[in-house]
Length: 76
Image (cartoon, rainbow, N blue to C red; front, side, top):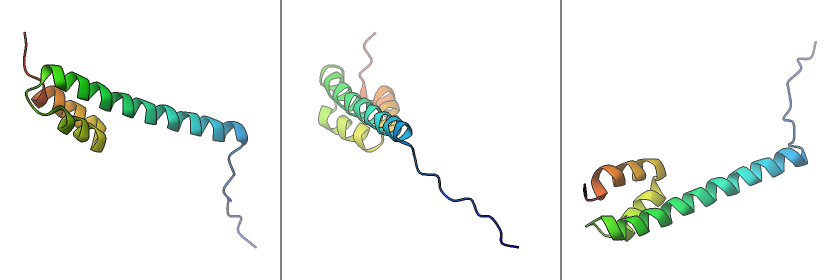
C-alpha cells in the first residue's frame, strides 16, 4: 500500500500578495526605525548618531532596547 505524502500547496495569488505586502510593510517599518533612531540620537545622545543607526540596522529590536537604555542621555 503506497503511503500518501502531503505535497506543498502553492500560494494562491491573494496569499502571495499578502506575503509581499507584509514583507514590504516590515521593511518600511525597519527603515523608519533606523531614520528615527538616527534623528533622535543626533538630538538626545552624546554618542555618534550613525553608530546607533547601524546598531538598529543590524539588530532592530536589541538595538532599540540598547539605544533607550544606554544611548540616550537622561534629560528629566
